Amino acid sequence: MSSTANPVVKTKSLICGTLVTTDLSRARKMLEGALGMECVSPSKGLLYARDRAFGKGGDKAGEPYWVLEIRERENIEVAQEMLNHWGVAAPSQAAVDEAYEKLSANKEEFGIARVQKPRFRNGSYAVYFSDKDSNWWEVEYRAPELIYTALREKGDQYAD
Image (cartoon, rainbow, N blue to C red; front, top):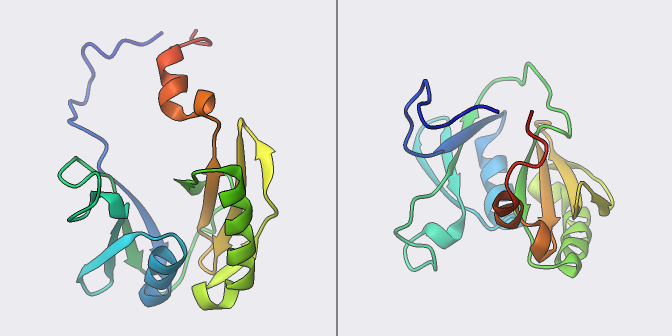
């Protein structure tokens, strides 16, 4: 088991992740319209997205947050696979089913290439979909005992 008491890299927090798109306006429309994220474009070819709850007036306003950085490129050199996906939490299993229906019905509007039927996998009930740039997304519901904070509280159970 490794120790975090003296890590090689001294960090404060996880702050961002990145993905690429060939069409920033299409990506923004999907992030805002389909997933309800808050987006800003601080410069040409760049978009930042975050959970709307952290924005002004949101229930998490003022708390540290994680940003998804989207860069526009002429082409996507390495297509993503489903296991390399971005996930958002749904409040219930019914909400995942509803997401499936709405994503399927609005594929063209949001630039969605593929939507998989919801199913139970790895302790959650989720629908996976990919955008036209091969970025995969998951809308996931986990029972309270399986949310990441509850799993984290259990601690290492399989550490070497």
